[in-house]
Length: 70
Image (cartoon, rainbow, N blue to C red; front, top):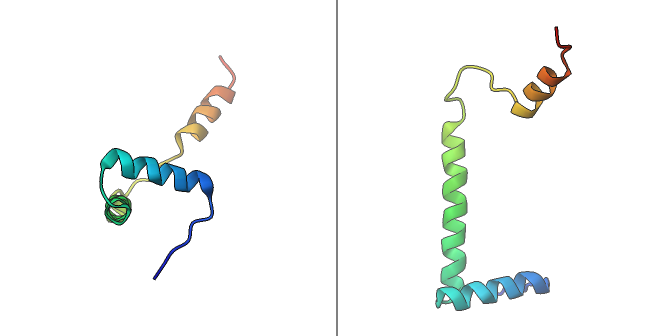
């Protein structure tokens, strides 16, 4: 199966990485995909690990900052 990439910037970035790593593009892409899927697997493994609700920090900060100073 052949994959065509039409995005010139992406092609240039891949070419720079291939040159810097001095290895075939297939090997580079396999490494990148392995790293990506490993991160996703780690995040999914943490799902349900914590019983408490985790709030979005930016929401907490915004709520705190909007409270009147007494």
